[in-house]
Image (cartoon, rainbow, N blue to C red; front, side):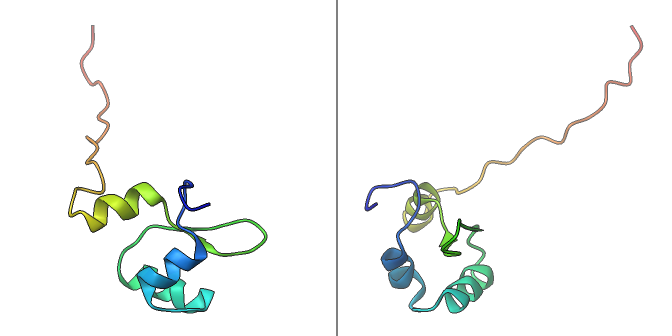
Length: 74
């Protein structure tokens, strides 16, 4: 899964410096890395694309315009 959608557990260990899942999750939360808890193995899942963009200093999220109701009457 080296080039998969998500970082591997080994890549998460390198990123966070931690070995256990709970410690990795705390690190991800403290450092504002979005993740989900995946499947039956319960490992945190970090998108590879987010990781790559963040490590390169690129914007990691797009700002969405707030949806506004159409108040005008036709």
